[in-house]
Length: 61
Image 1 (cartoon, rainbow, N blue to C red):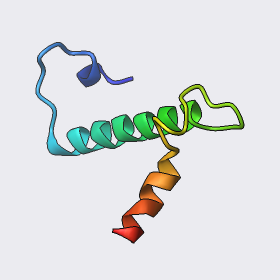
Image 2 (cartoon, rainbow, N blue to C red):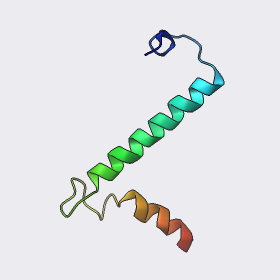
Image 3 (tube, one colour):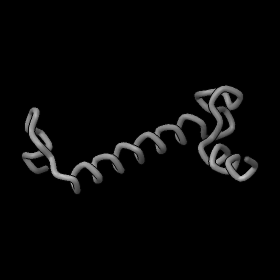
Image 4 (cartoon, one colour):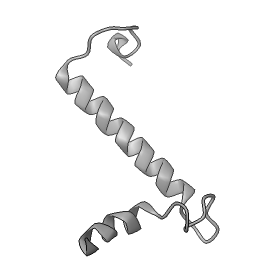
């Protein structure tokens, strides 16, 4: 890893902000999908639906 990632209060340029933002969003989506996947998900479907069901619901709006 580069030292820019671990430098406290260091400045990062626009490209690095975009990359870190995309990585963070993908991490959250993957974590959400893992918690709601399978026959017996960790989180109940009535409380926390699967991400694909949420995305498909936008078509109904």
